[in-house]
Length: 351
Image 1 (cartoon, rainbow, N blue to C red):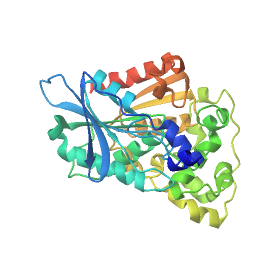
Image 2: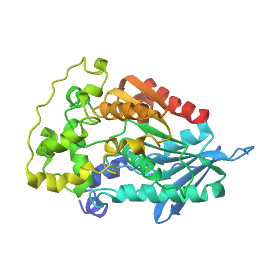
Image 3: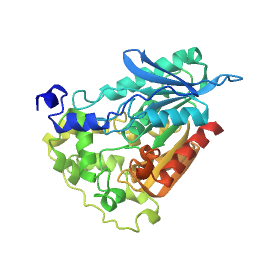
């Protein structure tokens, strides 16, 4: 037991991180790989070894893991694959994790590393006008938030594109059709999603039941966001597996005061203003049918399209949350996940 204590494994959080941390792989014959710091944020940069006629595209990647788990080590296989197959320079970001660090620490780390890379892109053989911001799950949330923020930064190059892989984009409604249909589908359960959101927000899961039931937001706040956050905006084919609209419930002021930062666009990018959406770059969005977060992405896709933003959408009909990360896991891998990753690569190569 003393051995486990020394490793910090005597908590569920510590043990889960230990099991999921991954390890840095050996040398790659096709890539130069180096650990750096952008500002005070650790990053790992992957640069193709092959000579290039001109500057390459740059891909910033924010890993998933519910803002609590994941690392640049655990995302080595994905980042290596993207760098090799798309012939891009990839920067993987080691942002701080909850509950030790709460919102907006993760977002700030991602913004800091992104702005640093945009300012120094040429040092890594990257065209500053061809930088793509990407991420999966919680990392997709961070990618969307950073992209929106950079719309207001005329001192920096314009972001060329964003890649959002089954992103979490709002924390107001946990009763959308995808939440109802997939509430107990591994690996991301409905209750666990709300738990991660609260850990990110404030470092504990108090008010979990209020958030799940939708009584953490006053009715007037819900009505304010209804034009963007409504099951009415989700295509009918995504409701055939079942959907029962939730009757709005009044919230307690105590709960709302504790969680109201959920409404900030840097926390819930789906809720940003139309003026910001219209300025966002070309986007790639990947969704999975059997994923509680499916409808967050579908709603954001509609907002982007309504704002005139070109969107490439890839939907994995038999996919579930996290399927991309299993692309190289042998018997645990799924052909649909590998195909999804290859569609991301193809999108990057097209830019």
